Image (tube, rainbow, N blue to C red; front, side):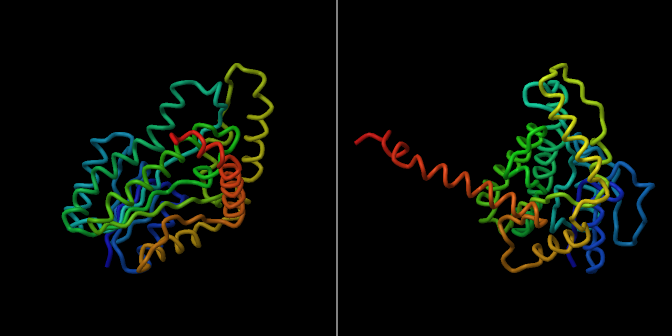
Length: 272
């Protein structure tokens, strides 16, 4: 039996899907949520009302889960949301709020959970990134930046934590049929720069029209992630969704081709 700590327990979201899958395998789950009254109780489910952007609340939630379970075997950093906006025009406070939730909250959870894992010389970290963390999306520049930051810190943490028996996995979902879009897709965006209005309007319209029709199945995604956690050798990265996989492979192939095309220049700037 594994003990899980999962953030982002929004009804109809991936966090709840992860929790349901872990519970179905006989595991115990601590799930942070802002809406505990909207979730179905379970005898192996510990609901933890918490705002993950508050490090004190994160620390208290982790401490309660460790006390209840005797330790945390798997942490899933799932809490997050999107923001529509241009790189030039998104208000500074919106950028900071975006990073607080999508990046700094992840660091707060990691710093709270890792000491216990190091002490036991065992554990698994799952950081939920996005295909946007591998291939940027116009209209989501700062969300893309935050997810690229998650990719970078996950890559380094994987190597830093490996000597202590801690495994680290980045998961990059594409578009999944959750309630994620409902929270931000139709929010008004008025940056005061008319040149970007058409782009941002098109992005929002596409998301609203796709809501409820996304190709990804959250239950299958949860099953894939839990399977990876239970694997003897989990993958370093796990892209979820066919369209997301194609986008990631295409973009990274273009990046690699571009780097190789400038190899002579790259090598030519070294001292003889």
